[in-house]
Structure formats: structure tokens, C-alpha cells
Length: 219
Ligand code: DX5
Ligand code: ZN
Image 1 (spheres, rainbow, N blue to C red):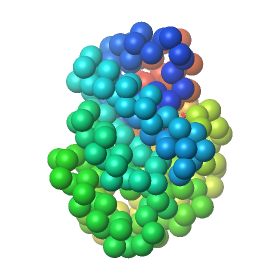
Image 2 (tube, protein in one colour):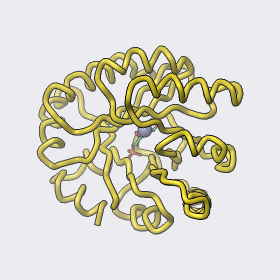
Image 3 (tube, rainbow, N blue to C red):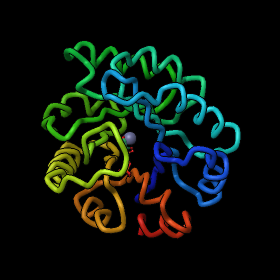
Image 4 (cartoon, rainbow, N blue to C red):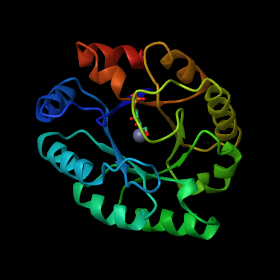
């Protein structure tokens, strides 16, 4: 089953609450919360996302899918645990070695939520293999992390396919999430390659009817 996680990164100022209510009514499977610290990526969305996520938590039962693009993962896990996320994803590139990755996994585990690891476009997918038995999801970035509205990097399709094959060959149960440039044109390709959670920001927020586009993305 394919699910859609709506990135609220590009929500228009002043239209936040209207947009969040409409997304809730349109049955987005998750709200995707893009947390940026101004260090791991240039932009800083940290406080805004904390505010948005707490607001959404109050008005909606939809699960929160928290994507941490931060250097200090533990601090972000502590801060965002208040909004009871369903998934917390951190970047493999933010950890300096294998021990730190394993420690981070264990740290997130204490929050009773699912654990995801994300890889940037230039990181080889093989680097995540050894952690797969300990996590629930792998997030393949299909653009450089940092901002919404970029174009899908077509080389990422092969990366999704490679991961899907490895997961199946090893009888693992891991969700594959894709993030960046997902729209009605690119969705069929990523789904065919094996992705089952599609993050979409601008494609959904710019659509006239959120429900229609969410259903079409899943279809
Ligand atoms: C990029 C973020 C994405 C992005 C998605 O760093 O992780 O979630 O905002 O936005 P679109 O769908 O516009 O590419
Ligand atoms: Zn994201």
C-alpha cells in the first residue's frame, strides 16, 4: 500500500491553520515535518516546525513524520518528542561513525516511535544496509535536502530499486520513503521502483483540491 506524507515546509504564511485543517480533512496519511537547523542545511525551520507540529498534534490524529535535517540529533529528538511523532528520521550523514548511528537509533527508540534513516543523493545506499535490521524506514532523498520545490533527480530511481531488491532478498520489512520533487509525473516511477511512502510538498500545497491530488499520488 502506498501512503502520502504531506510536507508542510512550503505552507503559505498566514494560511497555516486553514491548510492544516484542509490536509487533515483530505486524509493525508502523515504530516511530514521538515526540521532544519541552519547547520546541517542552510535554512533554519526549527522553531517554526516545532510550533506547526504542536498545532497539528492538537487539531489532527494524523501521524507526524518528523524529518530531522540537523546536526544535533539528540537535542531535536528531545524537543520534538513533545509532539509524539510516529516516525523520527535522521540523516546518516549527520553521524560521524557507526557507533553514533547505533546510539542514535537506541536514543530514538525510547520515544516509542518508528525510526528512519535518511540518505542524501550522493550517499551510497549500501551504507545503510547494516542498520536496516534495527530501523523501520529508509528515506531516500530525491533532491538535495534544504528546500522545497526542486526537481526530482532521475538517478535516484535506480537507488530506490537497489534498496527494494536488497530488502526483499533479505526478507526485511522496511518502508521506503522518497522525498523531493514528487508529483503526478514522478510518482509512478518511484512507486514502480519500490517506494511506498511518498513525501510531497509543493505538488500538494499548490493543488486546487488536496484530496484529489493525494488520491492520485497513491493511485
Ligand atoms: C527538502 C525536504 C522535503 C521537501 C519536499 O529538504 O526534505 O520534504 O520540502 O518538497 P517538494 O515536494 O516541494 O519537493
Ligand atoms: Zn523532508
